[in-house]
Length: 85
Image (cartoon, rainbow, N blue to C red; front, top):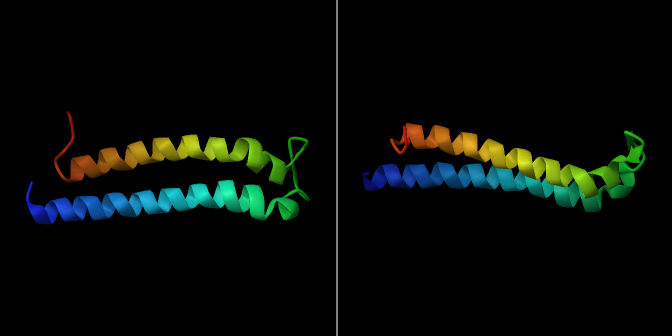
């Protein structure tokens, strides 16, 4: 793989990582810690929404982000010729 393609590959990979980690930070830290009092005014399944984000929401979002990252990287690998199939 030529150097120019390697740089494009890693630039796109880092862009994906930054976006996904930003989403995780938003859900786990901002919603689960900083905005917990405002979100607790809303109830989800009988639980306060701030509590839900702090306890379950961040974990669910993290697992979903793992699958999104896998899908994005498979597409990126195919785009740059690294697919295993």
